[in-house]
Image 1: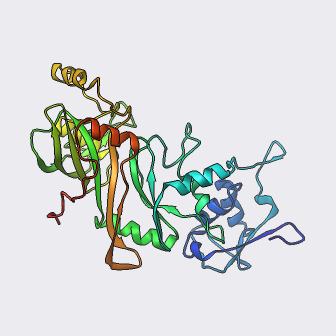
Image 2: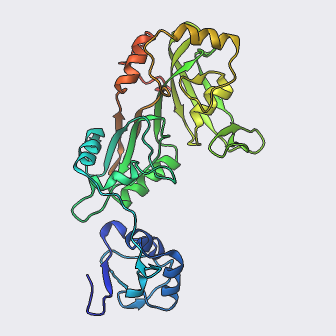
Image 3: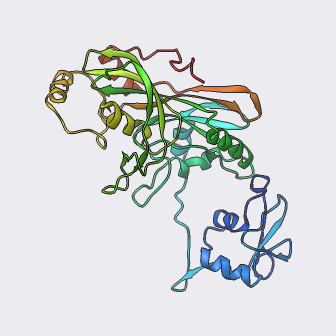
Length: 342
């Protein structure tokens, strides 16, 4: 709403209770630049319930934030508008089709392959930009709780409120969440199960690529269990990344086990003679042209009742089902190979 002087008055929603004022402005007044917001706050032109406020002030649900007309940034005399894509009926149908579980606290999606979770300079379509589909009557959108690589499919969790997001965030931070990934690796590992402890750091040559570095890397731990073998050519392996480092499973599989994820171009090792033979053996099979890594199952405390568990499974997509079948693997495997682990 606004008054006769074109001031805007925005009421703080329940979902924004406790949020810092500067972060609230960034989300709710996107046309207001950071520099201008700081200037207006210093001059007392942005007020909360009629009083001056600092950038790090924590808002309370129900408060009213006064935004002056000068908050509208101008570029060469023209009003600055955010480039926000319109959500279409097709977008609604698409996002609803991804839902595999929902309740009053969370929404779980089966994220498809080749869809980014968040945007970037070259990424215009992504999960985060389509969350408006799930907005409630007050316009509150769910929040991302964790992320998956663009090339990885599978279960991804959204929190319906800031409070639930904080609770779930703590569960991930305390490592109370069991994340089970399914993968096809090639060649098959020599051992059938084990624990990988290998620190990970960003590669100096490629900022989007990670590598093992015992001296400077961050601690990373991954459990793995071979479910089935297809000779030496490939194996169906379950992974449980106990830590959440970028590309953790992909790096540990390729650089520690020496068995990269099938179709993972970023971490494919130099082809040796055995690898070339394996590629030739698999050439005639119906194998999906993508990375064979799928976030299959998520087990975590229910945010409303920590004594109970949410157990959410994302079925394999059709292209991976065909790969599993072609290699003779059971795509309907039901067991938890890490059940005996703490």
